[in-house]
Image 1 (cartoon, helix red, strand yellow):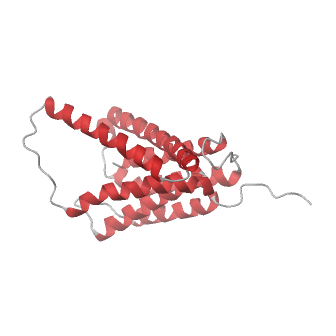
Image 2 (cartoon, one colour; image 1 turned 180 degrees about the vertical axis):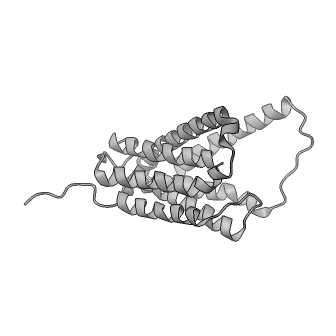
Image 3 (cartoon, rainbow, N blue to C red; image 1 turned 90 degrees about the vertical axis):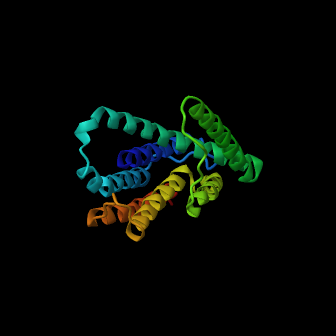
Length: 217
């Protein structure tokens, strides 16, 4: 999981820089200034620091080829997420509402899940359908709708990079809070985890500093 999260953060952060640089989102072109590059690097390093205790508790060499594969796929997923955010925001800006990209995303996702489940059940015998009894598991869909809707609106005003890194910081901080409040048997939280997570806020502040040079008098 740590490899996946770190790869996702890296791919999403770097992808958002590239997407903004070429003006793929509705916010227009945002050049690669020192603030944006340094702030992005701070968040990537902070995420790596936060994940260090988990890496230390895992025998990475035992399954190195598999870890490399997972890391590559997660980086690609992060890059794809950055592009998706820009496109969703563009569709939302053209349509004048975040409902259009949100509905499109969830319609396509639901169809893909149905097809995947039907194929998986047709080639194996998983037994009868069993629905989880924990009510909070069903909140994921609602939170997903809010996530896509927000990512369809915010890039127009703040840019894809600021939106993506804000969500990354929120994801890491929320994960830290959950690990502290409702820890699972494999939860590892150390001072390094807390410091690395909080430093992502520093990177977010640096990224949001004025990126456009002030006109000279």
